[in-house]
Length: 107
Image (cartoon, rainbow, N blue to C red; front, side):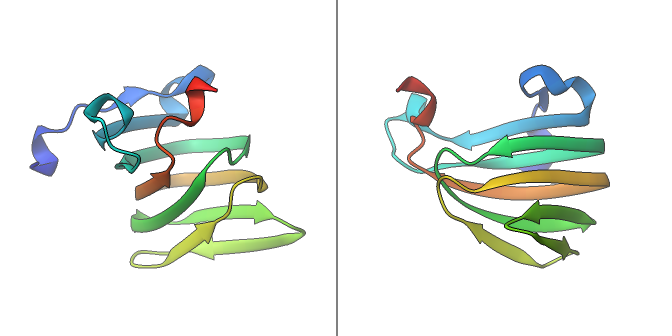
């Protein structure tokens, strides 16, 4: 899949703050979900409902989790286990994500 062909769409109630373009997931019959996310002027509280690996490709992403601040720059990555309560914060960040299981929202 070519990056330039991806179609980003707003995610949840965060509108333009968080946009996602999926690559694969439950709709493809796989337990692995993967895709790209763009965050712009974002401050998004979330509880991880799956295991996730995030890799920053552009910009800076700050994650507030477990009493710590993780500042991720281009080529940095982090593993977030299911159940982690956090806040995503970014003026701008382009990230690639992989999640398991991909059908977390169907429970």
